[in-house]
Length: 304
Image 1 (cartoon, rainbow, N blue to C red):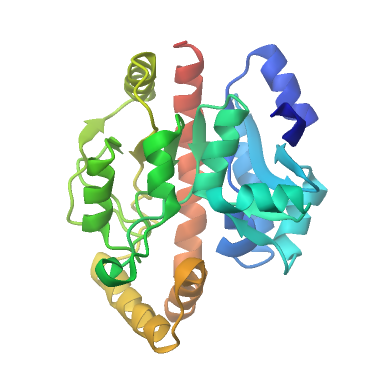
Image 2: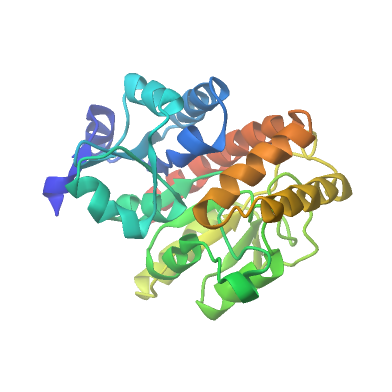
């Protein structure tokens, strides 16, 4: 298995020194934001982790290897490339065998992090059950991964383009705890509100670390959603963003956009309809998640 995994010098050194390491995805760079904001945000998020005593490990598939930690040049490549595959669980074997370049989704990043012995992952928002899934069966592989892979995922809740109620039902069925970090209501990516309660509210990194460690010490499979609300000053109004998303969903339906193309289309359309304010919110929430993720990773590292 180790023949497929390549640690960057920074990550390797961090492991040798026993430092907390935090996984980061690469789809947010290649598919989630436009250039140059994508690369700039990736670099800033990595620096936030370093400044707070952690080692960043941005993950991607390159030349037959799962790269755990990317160079500055590789970050730039992912920000500019037009032919980067969006890699989930089903795609990893094929992309590695054919030595194609793949950007890891939440699911693929979780898998790769666990293979590399990394327990915490920071992202923007998780995938979930898409609206209309009762007929399309369009359900993100992220949810199944959360049920099976032992990695904590710090996020700003589920993307608000999803059916959040059904997403929570799916996670409940799979036994995935949804933790509200300092909140009792599940945040919905751009907004702090969703109208749905989390399973548990925890208010400190130590409490989150203790819960994760207890879960895994009991050998209970799967990870956990650690839902961290976007900072209030950057949050978008709930009714405003809901109306925008409804318009974007209607256009996606008209254009027969389905499967893994839905999320990038919707995020792009939301950015257009909000005149860029959604992109600013996206950047703000990812940075905030990195800050909280660093604190939880340090607490986890001392609670082994």
